[in-house]
Image (cartoon, rainbow, N blue to C red; front, side, top):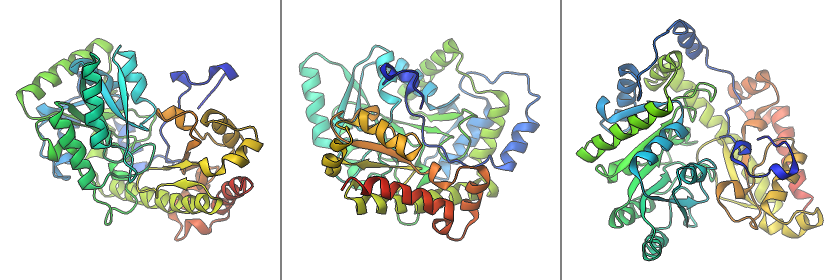
Length: 405
């Protein structure tokens, strides 16, 4: 997250990136990319057969049978979501908080974004009653809400909506006539997959939900942009996919050939890829749980992290101590905490949260170490929390917050 001047707060180009794993590229994936580096033919708009068929197998293993003609691939989730929203039309409803890049996409298209509070138990989905009331109010005021964005595994809150809560949100969306887009990029980063059930809205609304997966969530490095989008197997879904491909073509949003080869390989989840994804999720889960304990010990609040490489902290109970440091809102908290921890700590205002709420997203990647060697040591350690460099990073977090009590 970069800034050039103090006045540069908030522009999209300075927004926070998604939390990174902090680990070197898997050698097997590097070999696949290298072998395909000589490809000169461009991938077609929406991706070639190999990556789309691999995406079908990927979703099939997760209980979502999919045909290649219902899939589109693009150079990252933002490019695909922008094309989909442009193709669909209408205003968009989003949970509050939500990923930092969602709202700018909606507004860049000239659409209106309406944020709906999330339930106390989790992020990623709107409270169903608040959703229905928001739709009613917006339509009464002349708005045109047609799309609901949600996360089956959430950035920024690192939570997974319980199945009953997700079902209620989907039922509310269906009754309100909303098309659901489910960002499931973090689905395969669940820390304890045997204990946490992740469902997709496409299972509940097979004719009314699209599924978006950015491979940078669990399978590829962010520097190799690739994502896949699953459309409903309906005439409307076919029409929407065709319109989406038109937008991808017009904007030149195509997957690079070598990256498409790596994406197809990763989507098939061979043992090395699946093993690395599982090990990464377990490592970040252990570190996130330890960071969560430091937050609670200092008097801060946070939902227990369940997925991803981050957690979302509410430092409201430490407001008096922060005020003594000249911190009165999330923007000032972002600067103050980031300077003391030495890593970006984007404030809640980045995620459409209230500016006055003292909330930040903390990434676990920087807690793994400062060098590739330290991070790999954490990945392979039987007890990563016992490593000196991991312990020092956690102690720094605890002492920084502890001094505010």
